[in-house]
Amino acid sequence: MIARAALLGCALLAFGATDASATPEEDRAAFIRTFQQRFPGVPLEDYVYGGFMFNKASRNHYDDIMAFPPFLGDIERGKALWEKPFRNGRTYAQCLPDGGRNLAGTYPRFSEAENRVITFEMALNRCRRDNGEPEYRYDDRATMGVLTAYARGLSDGMRMSIKVESPGALAKYEEGRRLFFRRIGQMNFACSNCHLDNAGKVMRMETISPAVGQAVHFPVFRGGDELYTLHMRYTRCMTQVRAQPFPAGSEAFNNLEYFHSYLSNGLPLQASVYRR
Image (cartoon, rainbow, N blue to C red; front, side, top):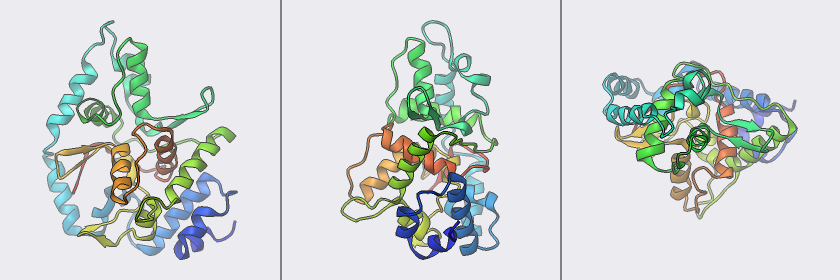
């Protein structure tokens, strides 16, 4: 392969817009090499802490908050939704493999039958629909948000394991990759401008996190109390660059999540964490 890491380090556009023959694993390895060259001495496992990985005081602050999280009430509300039987008497645990444990790290998945990416939130909504319940909105913090916060927590500690194993899956992965590198909005920014080119730098008094490690910890609680799912975070990023966001749960965001999550393969999940 051409020296993909060198392209990453020198020119975002070159990495994002060329070399379509690269495999997902080559992409992931190139991201990791680039960050490890830029941040020598930072263990790969520490990437799950986002911007906190760069500063010992910030990491200590994070650890203190996570010892007694202020958002436990939201997780308890999610647990109540998870455990409440549907009108037919069944529960989420009965319609998901292994009771929903050690499952979230295998999502998003590509469905050959439907030719589309299926996210964990979609799996939860399908469980509801299959049991005669109305689906939740993907951007509703009080329902899908807290449910996801609890349900993803059942997979804490498992390693992210996203599969791209067919031409159809690769096509959706590539669509997500293109969106990651596409400049959008009045500010003409791409996801990669912040989370690849400028990872580790400070913007608005916050350290920008690398793309690797981001997908393993959602939902997050910003400021300790404001829940964001991954798609809510995508929406906010697009709004901040003055672009019209895609809807949460849209095919565009699903494909972006597919690419984004693959970059964190092998890292452990920890749902519902504090972020500033």
